[in-house]
Length: 181
Image (cartoon, rainbow, N blue to C red):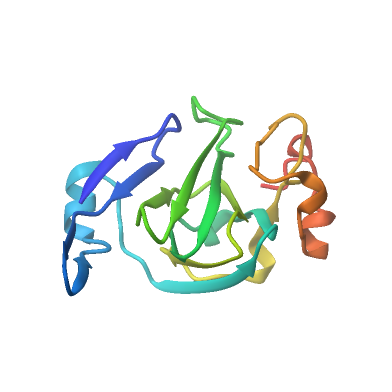
């Protein structure tokens, strides 16, 4: 696997080495030892989640706060999504900045989103199956969120805002300046 830095501190793109032939393909999706060697960061995951969504569904921006903060390794298993990470660590040189990348079943790219980041994605294909590996267990009381269309962040979600399908929680998320993170 190859690790590529993003413009955000501690946020990485993981590109697997894919072996293809007439039977199909094989690749190692994640290797904890190699990840730690290349990034110096802990890559131990304890919970896997999968979601299925249709075109226009926008999930985010979400995070877990405090002792329940989570780093995530995300990928798209079917279809395509525009995946977004926002650095919400106030002591970080990239605080308040975002990075987006198209994750698809075809490109097999993954994004490592460190603790202290907000995360979300919009579905670009007819449907998408999305995978999250988390390094800490989910805790409902530790949920945080930021409004997906906050003007201070100015995130391009690659879909028209009128097409965005949002949960009630995401519709009512606080703005960036309200610091619900």
